[in-house]
Amino acid sequence: MATLVTFHAHPDDECITCGGVMRAAADAGHRVVLVIATGGEHGEIVPNVLDEGETLAHRRHAETLESARILGAARTEFLGYVDSGMVGTATNTAEGAFAAADVEEAAERLATILREEDADVLTHYDDHGGYGHPDHVQVHHVGQRAAELAGTPRVYQATTNRDEMRRLMAMAREMGLGLGDGEGPDERELAAMGTPEAELTTRVDVTPWLGAKRDAMRAHASQIAPDSFFLALPDEAFAAAFGTEWFLRVGEPTGGPFETDLFGPGAA
Image (cartoon, rainbow, N blue to C red; front, side, top):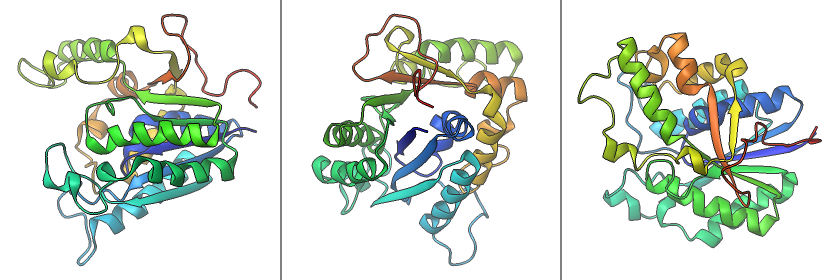
């Protein structure tokens, strides 16, 4: 049995980005540990979801525990930082904000978990956090440093395949899924998302675990409404959009055949 630690910025990031590899690893008998940096305090709230007097952070904590259960996590930890909000907002530098945290201090918090678990694999994010969110970028810096401090042998940057996104958008328009002219990200926005296919090292087919991935998304009801893009997609379109999870393995050359397993041969 190997141990996967998967590190994310906010509640719900885990199921969208790595939900498939989490559930697949758990089903293969590996230990899965989920670490969330912040409480997601500044997320946009789905209307009429919170109970009277309930805070968003309290709800998102409970939602994360349910998502983690669905995805097979044996342990879930929160590093205790505050959501920094979207780029360019005053919350980026507020007291306790993850984006403003000292990288060495935050990395030591994560490294402590990596050492306790004797982690074989760590996932964090690519160098621009997938799309530039300050907390996602900080996950990259903190995750990378924590792996160095703990000596974690296999480190993967979770990302999206920028070229595949272009192909999927073209497919969505052909299928009439609401991406007409002027809808969805434009080319300038696409150029800032994810990673070009030629720079990726790892492609994991998670289609057998899409049911769990979608159920974990539903668990985050304060953020993901039933009629949201994530949950309203027809099954075929959902599989096309979320059935593959992409990574860049740190220290590995790009441009060769894709790896298809975060654990590699003999990890079981």
